Length: 142
Image (tube, rainbow, N blue to C red):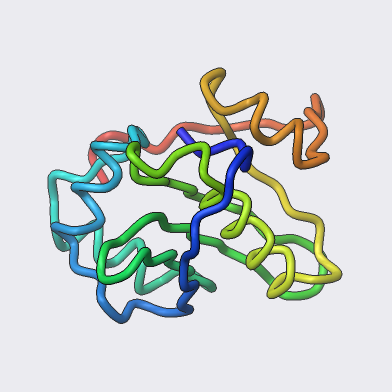
């Protein structure tokens, strides 16, 4: 679950895959929890390599959070994942990552899917729930 930004913690935001491994990503996603298929390291790494933008937040040498985005850079950006280390939630890490995404994707509409757990977080950041979307789940044999 992302944090709500009530307090501040000093984090360094990096762009790119430096410092990441499939195991490190999977551990954070399981701990956050962010429900993604993370049992296949090759698939996890491919998700990140093929993303338009990967931002990481670091507290010292520790991975504090990840944001992963697909974007065309013109109209739309899709925030695929936002995960924050549970011990650092509610300390501004999620808000810092969202701000960095908004900065790098300026001029595009930022779209995301969330769970009920994190909906109040996004609402406080001025995201609006929309009802004009359709989803087709991925086929399981991929």
